[in-house]
Length: 391
Image (cartoon, rainbow, N blue to C red; front, top):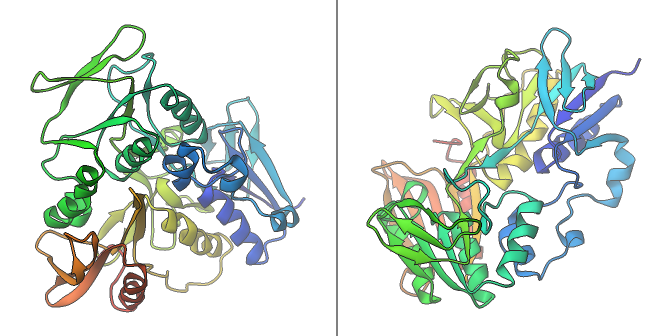
């Protein structure tokens, strides 16, 4: 019988892993398992163009005509519920199983929900295509939106809602949004986009609960303030989708723990994308990176590991992400630590067009750009040769 590799997860990381296996001359059976009924689609537009109604399902599809030649076997609308280590079988929620010689874990992450929000109409998270469709329908008849969380997803939803004409309030428990990845000064510079475009931003206050019986009516803050709301979007981060592996023997932490080449502690099982916590030699710990670029780049390494392609050192791509808000493009590459010095090298924060370089012991370790794509790209390219990933 032909050997079989099961790819668990049918989003960007899973599809890219399947492509990488074929690119590296694997000619056996590939079964791609996805819990959503949809063919692979791109997630970044869900909070922007797709939510605004300016991008269609076809526009965000990840598949290409060339994928028909990959000979993939799809099991969509079917969730993995377990991994039998002894037989290396992926157990599915329809009672069937896929016996595999190799397994790629690419189940991604799920949006965290606000406690007590289950069953209350008008309260949304945004992670999947179905989430985006449901939110888009609600926004069409709404006047007031409250976004809980001023991270990138929350900020992008707020931006899109303003273009749709809604009154928008963003609530953030931290005193400065995005201070973790960007630092307080640069986080504040990016958050200033909200005020520029008429979005109310409330900082340093938490959410006590939601008000409403069948449908949300308001958000109650910890200081007693009530914010009227027709729709609420909860953007408080994501957790790796790994519960189904609890009894598999696969080592778990903040994700599926892997070495630098994406191998887990189980022979023949690798992990990629948002669900993978990969060992970083420079950071001396496992690091889980929830960024589109990471999901695109890791699968080639994982495929080589699964196929036994020698002991070549794993590549160390510099973490990169971007966000489009209120017509501005924010780009970041590298990894910032407390104590790093942020220095604006081009433009100014006040003009909403600048490049900032982060330095540690006199050497660049990260770069942030707003509306400066050409210079940012040049500095990012320089980082690739000087900065270890997740430094």
